[in-house]
Image 1: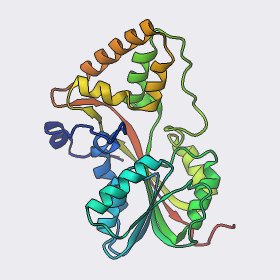
Image 2 (image 1 turned 135 degrees about the vertical axis):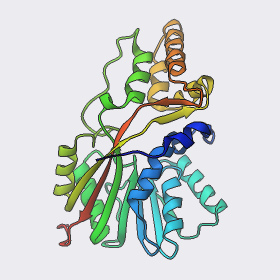
Image 3 (image 1 turned 120 degrees about the vertical axis):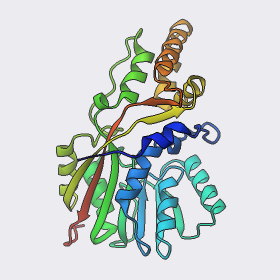
Length: 284
């Protein structure tokens, strides 16, 4: 099954990516994905929710508003993102959120505590995915739900292939690694199913999400936003002056070709992955 959000409203009035002090604004980039993810999460009013890789906390805050008499814990490794998440939550008067800087692969969560674990593109970077999801599973009560939003393969995500190609066309930059932790580590449903099954999850399902990602209201803004992303900034930083300028020119042309007149968009494909914590707790 493929699901899509109503892209027309977002295309008419996209929100500029205005991250804090150099932070890329993933919330603006992923607005259409987020609508589908929020619907799939189905946070209940009394749920105790764990949000893995919460970033600046949009999914955490939305879960907190839905879990009005419940609670939400957002976990991330980025101190600047968590700082912004706390500030935004305070600004909204949300008192049922706790943020923790922690590695979910090894952090000691309270056992069998949470009713739901969510992650919006924040759970693909574990060095040992089975160990990580086993650890997360121990924090979930038997029967609790897991809802992940993860990227499909690089070749199905135009934002990843087209932008990188524009920056590396005149260089001998190696192809990005295909194994290990990274944005596409859960792209293969067979691999993901194997990880989650080994970690004690069952009733595993995949829903195809086909939505564009947004990089800015115009080419100039999109150019600045793309270079806030570490992968692309690092690529440019490794080039000599002339080659870097050529790469910037190609990047501007690529972004201009994707300017719809209502914003710069690239095609993308993702999975919404759902699962249940097995009712028999996984061995410690």
